[in-house]
Length: 300
Image (cartoon, rainbow, N blue to C red; front, top):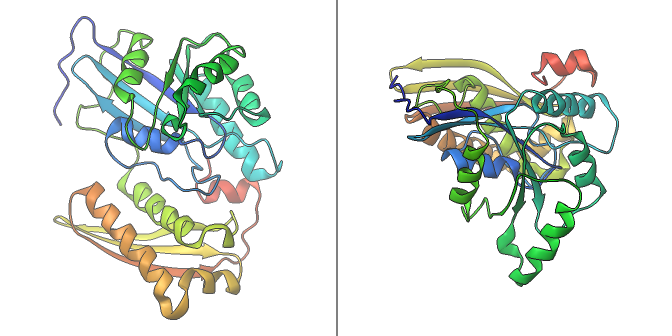
């Protein structure tokens, strides 16, 4: 792998991306690093893991950590585990991006803000700024949120459209320590292809089945083989009941085919080569929603 040339002013550090569910954290990280490694969905709790995305410039290496949305409702084992993931991330990062949706700041946002340690620089990122037709409203909204904390910077952006992401990156670099790069310049994540393949399938399940399917449904990789550039991937979607299995498969298998096709295309784009993908839908047996079960299925 190519190594980064380090100058005296080269900076490198970890940037945590936090916010309540569905404010665009994963979309923002994907745009910042220029590749889709963290899955996105309108469904809350899509991100269940700590995902690291890496962007290397001539003068800095940005190591972004996309966290699950901090859960303020439903005090169950899954949400406790997700929240612990967020808290553990915050104590070890150099900069925090606190993401809010333009025009919306409520008690859920406030509760997330209260979890951020006092000693770390926090940049307020007002996402979805493109949806505010009257841009004059952005200033009073920013002032309202800024009254809650002394932010290092405030940057309105549109993660989806890429609006002002260069400015955001410049602000982040200001607060990174002078360090040599940690990863090679062609690395975009520290996650394995097996993990990314599983996440891509899970995203498509959420996208095409949506609110019909319980949160406890998950995806496991049964086999991952590589022959030259070809990757052969066999995955299973695990659901709780036969009725959920029927939802995922769809009429004459149409929905499962759509999930498989779109997942394969995303994998081929990310991995840079052809993918043969087979997906089965299976009903779980003896799987409980507890911390031991969560860890067994990768919820750490």
